[in-house]
Image (cartoon, rainbow, N blue to C red; front, top):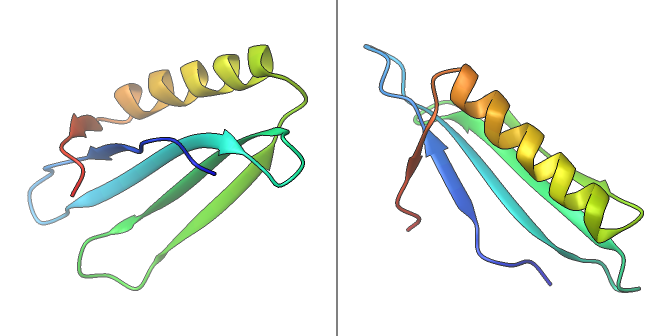
Length: 80
């Protein structure tokens, strides 16, 4: 089950990119970090589900992704 999603997007002229992040657990209760990315109106993009050993590692991985998105010009946007 995944918890609420964080949505990031850029407003670069001519390019609208998005990045989604969600956390949760797999069927066995292990923490997971789900990420999806792409360009609006584009077929390019992808997704990744990362299995992590514990909640502390999940928190560190989430913090790393938040810093990376900010560094690449993404800003948090409303989900929906």
